[in-house]
Image (cartoon, rainbow, N blue to C red; front, side, top):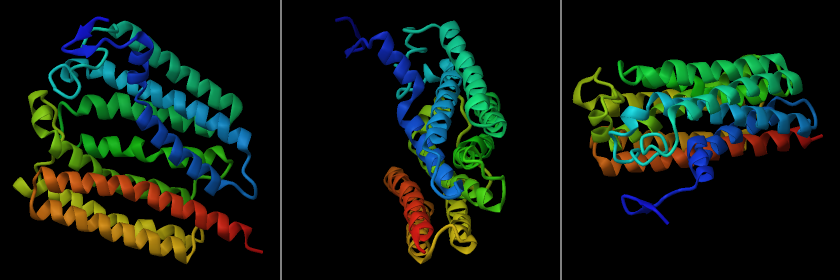
Length: 298
């Protein structure tokens, strides 16, 4: 088998799987499913959820493909991404671009026909914001993180409207939880890979606030996350068990962000990143289980 810098050469199928970034897609679909169940009145329509997940999954793959087309040159300058299919030359720019565009259009049409037009429109908007705004902005402005947080926070809303629920305050709370969660998460990643990003000319770390800016912004958003995470309890989506879980996990997240601010280094950044990975599924699963409990209570 041929090798690339000591690594076995992947098959074309493996390369397309890499383009799709399945781990990111799984997290997206997890939040879509949570939003769908929370937005459903009575027993969820599982077929509609399946259609929603398939359509949004196509959109997530399209977004990741178009992102890698736009970033193929900067990916080639970073150690952690230089072996991706495009910078390594195993796939061509044209074929991946066509792959992304076809999936984006297919996703919108499929969701419009099988779910509803609002879900289709918001999903297509998510692709445009992620690939068309956030990705190119990374080369020009440190505010790219804020731009990327908007499409990143939409998946639970996509699930919510796919269930037939209206866009309302409760949907806004789900959006806000994911929105504020992202900042400490991505700032930790940006700090860990700051040298790679700098070499590629990507502006991923904030400068407003001086040398401590990454920690300040991480802690600020972790603190802002707390009242929004309690919101579902206040509106009746979750009960006291959810409230306690959200409060405890939120305080742990803020504590990890404070540790990163107090001593910005790779150790505290990785601790913050690990805490972010525990926070999101913990809060959303607690909300789901508590919602089901309350819904089944006579």
